[in-house]
Amino acid sequence: MSQQQPTSDVSIDEIPVDIDNTQSEEIDPADVPNEIESITRGLAGEHPPTNPLVVLKAARWWYIHGKGGTDPAFRWAIEWACHLATDTPSDVERFDEFLEYLVTVGFANEKQSLRAV
Image (cartoon, rainbow, N blue to C red; front, side):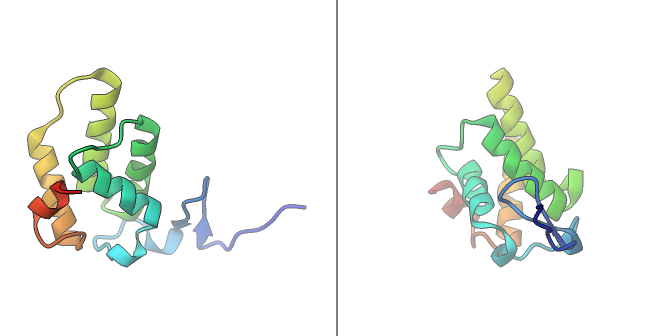
C-alpha cells in the first residue's frame, strides 16, 4: 500500500514543498523549515557548510519557495556549491546581496549579526 500526500504538500525528501506557496516574492521566516533555516544561516556564517549536497538542498528550497532563479539565497547557495566543487573564489558581491536579502526576509536585523552565526 502506498501512502498518499495531500496535493498541496509534496516532497522528494523530508523537506516539504508547498505547492500553493511556490515562487513567491515574500518569504515569512516562520514558513522556512528548521533544516533550511539552519543551512541558510550557516551559509551566512563564518563557517559555512562544506557538503555541496547539503548546500544544494537549501538552494532547491529557496528556488521553489523564493524568487526562482533570481532569489538571492538560491543564487548564493549555488555560488557556494560551485566554490566547494571547483575551489574557485566566490563572488563577494553576490554574498553581500545574500546577506541583505536575509535581513529583508527577516532572518536578522542587520547583516553583521548574520556573520556571527
